[in-house]
Image (cartoon, rainbow over all chains, first blue to last red; front, side, top):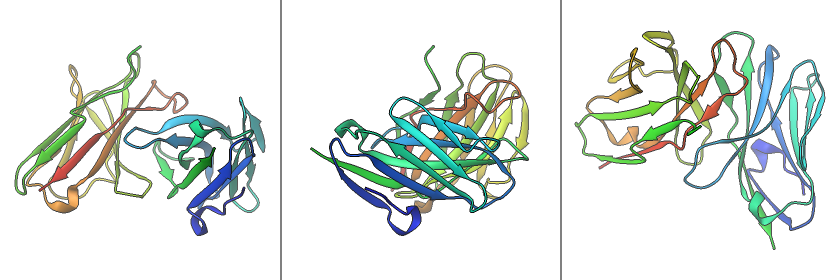
Length: 112
Length: 114
């Protein structure tokens, strides 16, 4: 399944399928990006990060792709599991300051 | 390592009362950040503090909100004369000196103004 972030804030996938969550960021000066997972009633949990001098980074079952030309970030989750159901946020850090700017999030629901 | 500790987890205040939210950073972290999350929205930056110093408060409302991070004890986010629109989840994050890598969030305080 695939979302386009702001236009599709919800994404439903079958267990075992791959998920792709997209995020468009706003500032070409952003130099560091993080994907967070937030479960209901909990704080954001770090999933994976990427610096602006990279275009791809892989973790365990997750891959982040960065396209600076179109200011686009995606999170790919392989073999999606019910425990992956949550809201996923991308966050960008600009090259001044230490705060992060968050997108509105995509709600992922995994259907058993 | 207990992580970033926030308390209380839930706070109910009547309109006009004061709300105090506390955040203890991770061990070894000296930078603290406060964010606010309205229902079904992303987190919005409020303020960035180091010990005894406010570094960036560009996201703080001009009135009723203040934050501190004293030499000893937790960081405090204080909201005076709360209104219904202050109802939100307030998250604290911390990071080590000079780095944002290792930026870690607490579980948040959910403020409800009745």
